[in-house]
Structure formats: structure tokens, C-alpha cells
Length: 256
Image 1 (tube, rainbow, N blue to C red):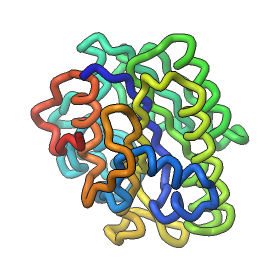
Image 2: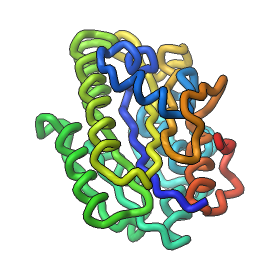
Image 3: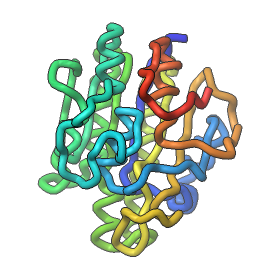
């Protein structure tokens, strides 16, 4: 296989929020995808540790990042983007939370755009449009698109609040726009980093730990529900889809 991939992460999107936000695209996407609505993230269920696990394939106790402050790994593991770039895959990052800049070592991205979530409005919609333009103009092999307004609304108003659910609805519309605006040569993988409860996350309760993982593309069976999956499975799945050998230290399994 040698697929192209857009990996979309909606920060703090609980599976039940995705399915109950009022956006009809949620059901439509599942009908076109292989998916798991009871996938699990890593502990602590905090944004940066979860993202490092997503891109470095190991749990936080292995990579050592337990808070939203980045520190270099004591025992470095090769990351997803480094592995793809070393195999001549063109990679790009589009995101709205600046701390994610440390997920990739310098020199491995062809494009990197950050639109600060806290200094702009409608950042999910704007960063989505930026990513779509780049994909259509440059045809990269791998694009990471991060949508962060959901997490912000969860902390400010509470998970499952009206404001939070509106943000989830908008995020799903952004995912739909990506799918409708780019070539169907791309596989779309949608997931969250963690869930949340009240105005917090970080615990090992299901409200914080359960995430959706949805994979839509020609390599995946339509309407197939997986009984289990993990955020650690995503980098292994991405490399397999792209015809690249995964890193031996990665702890997940392929979902193909």
C-alpha cells in the first residue's frame, strides 16, 4: 500500500458528543468508515502527553511527558513524521495550539502553519481552509490537522455543555469540508486525544479515556465497527497504509 493520509484530531471530543452534537455528518461518516467509538487514549489523559503518544507510538511512562510542558525524551523514540520523511513522504502540520510544535523535530515538515487558538476567532474553520488549500495545491502525502476549539469550550463551559456541543458540531462540519474538498485518493483518519467531564480531563475515568477513531478510505470496510482500539494503534496503522515500516519500539497494532 502507498496511501495518502489526512489525520484529523479534534481535541477533547468524546465519542458520545460526536454522535449527539446534532450534525448529520457524524452518522454519514461512520457509514463510510471502519470505526471504534470505545477506543482508549493513554494516561494521563492530558493533551500534550496524548499527542506525544500519538506521534511517538509509546505511552507517557515511556516517553516521559506527563503534563502540557514539553521536555526532550531521555530515551528517544523515532516519531511518525520522522519515519515518513526519511522514506521520502511529504508531510505537513496545521494546528491551533502552539505547544504542538514540539511534536516534530526541525527539518521534517514541508509546511507547518499555527493559528493561535487564543488570539483568533473561528480557528477550526480557518485552519481547515488553510489545510485544504495546501492539500489541493501541493498534494502532500501526510497532513495533520488539529482542531482545538472543542477542548477550549469544554474547559470554559463544561464537557457536554451547549457551547461544547456547538464546537463539536463545527468540528464535524470541518471534517466534512475536508472530505468534500480534496481528492478521494486520501484516507481520512479522525480521532480525539482524550475526552473530558465537567470542566476537566486527565483522569482514568471512561469520560476522559474513551475516544473515537474513524478511518475512511478505500482500504477500510464501510460501516465496520471495531470492538477495541487505542490511540497507540494510529501511527502503526498510518505507516502500514503508506507502505512504510513502523518503528520497532512502537507499542500499538495495525487496525487494517
